[in-house]
Length: 183
Image 1: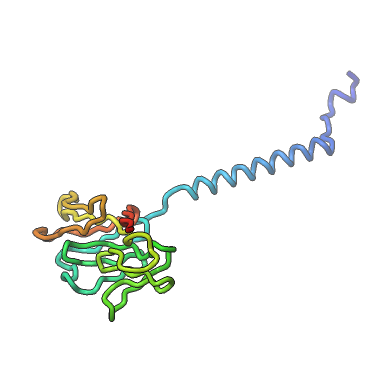
Image 2 (image 1 turned 180 degrees about the horizontal axis):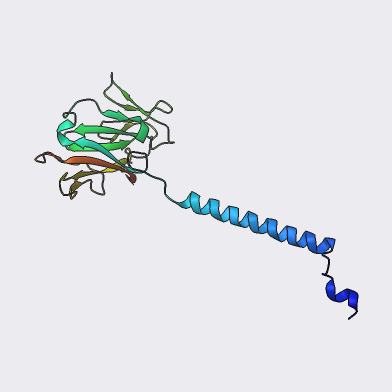
């Protein structure tokens, strides 16, 4: 080694610099994609929003049997109180996913797009829809202990609330029950 070579650092040539820049930018892109993927995959459902649990209040605050359903547009369901109990019907038609409405004159739900018709308990009446309306799981919870007293069954039948007093009604919009198919 000569005297000049000992005290000098090796210079980075253009090719090495571009390789380092390329690898650094690739690393930044992979970290960004990984971070976005992680945050996108995390559930963001909060209580009171669609996809989470919605507390409706006490059983004594519910409408009586036979009254028109109550619309909850922010969380996309209708709460109906029919002869068998209460149901939370998902506001999306089972035909092609249109948002259906309540028709006061005919006393039923009618999809404005293709004319599918449903009773207030979500059963199919007429139209191109292949099944009854989908519904959400309803829980009746003891306000003191937080214990679930009653819950909608897996068939989506109306939840009977007779004989239950001073309990809280919670609708879980993250647990959808698919409507029965008709022939």
